[in-house]
Length: 559
Image (cartoon, rainbow, N blue to C red; front, side, top):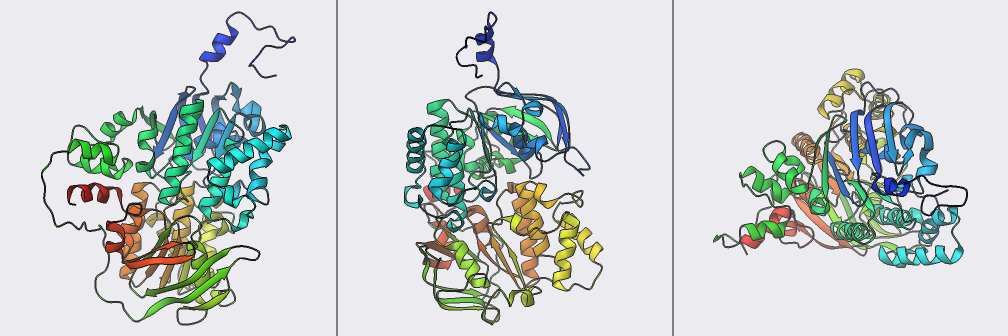
């Protein structure tokens, strides 16, 4: 029986309802947790109390324990992942160990890092209705909530679309809609904007903020692109090595991080912290107000930062598409006459809204999808699935969903498998050891790749892709998803090192900071077409939605 209204079989003691009202939604006491095969605990002596109506932002380096903590809140840890748990965790008054995921799911809604892990139905409409029907709600209520969620999340036009045809960002929106339809008391979001373009990310976070403010739903969220949500939070919790090392307001966090680790601040806040300002703005608007009246003059054009290579292309195109069309079976035209040329030695980023055709374009360039019309050349020949194994030593591909890459039970075996596919003849164990160290993955050799955090998975896929021999072409689909700023910076340095050794990168990304640092050329897609393309500096410095946060501030100073 629920505890909203006392029934005739339950006579509460005096003060019972007052105690329930005062009870925190999340109470964790001195909790330590080890994953199976884990050499060290993922959570260490952790204690946490979250009150009803809070908006909590979890931050920390990749692998610090954020995802494990969120898995604990809905019972996946320890019931699904196994392992050893010491201590106590109560969520909505229920003991996590005694209750399990099924009981908790009616009160705690969780959006995973990979939407593919949660989609269970056939179409968008059926997916949003699935959880409601399983909960036994009346048909009129199900219909009302489905329509409400489809409209509120901007999914009405996709209601009859099949789930495999959705882009990663569209799939993420569907998952959130299906969770919100259940009206959870606690909404747990693990990197919810990781696959969304900048505009869609803002739309999604606006929905989350509105749900929080208008319904009092408690929100617990991890997010590495802090410029999107830092100012939404009422509370920031920073984790290191499974422990909570800071707990306070966003303004307090900005002051605490300033002299310590500015990497966890939004980019514009990072600039002010490094400059030694006492007051640190959390948004571009706050920064503009702080420096209002500052008289400056400049050249008018803001240079996009980055360590890109100068000079003309070297040796002709690595990949080329001419009048490329692709139509999914019984689906929409995903590509409509795309022309694109990737020059050797000129890194290319492809950006655009969700569903614009970016990932489809990559798959066609690689031969994973046969073009409906048009011509594609890859490394001098027409690509196909049959020819891809023969290109393994020259080409590396990191898919949008890392789980699609993993075929082995441990990290070590996954890397050894990749070396074997590449035909590597050196000391394979030594190559694995060096690569684990280079990517900061030491100590994870015997872990199942699927149990890693999203950021660790991304780093592992890239580490495998860049095992020897060095590929001529590195194709990345959302490579920074789940990575904190420090890890992104490390990955950028590694990619640049490989660039010096002869690799060229083609990347689909929504991460404008990463794009600005990596790209020589940029293409922005919409409606299946490459609408505009050219030098990255020209494309990204003046864009309203595809420009780094610091550039938007500087463009205000130097109009």
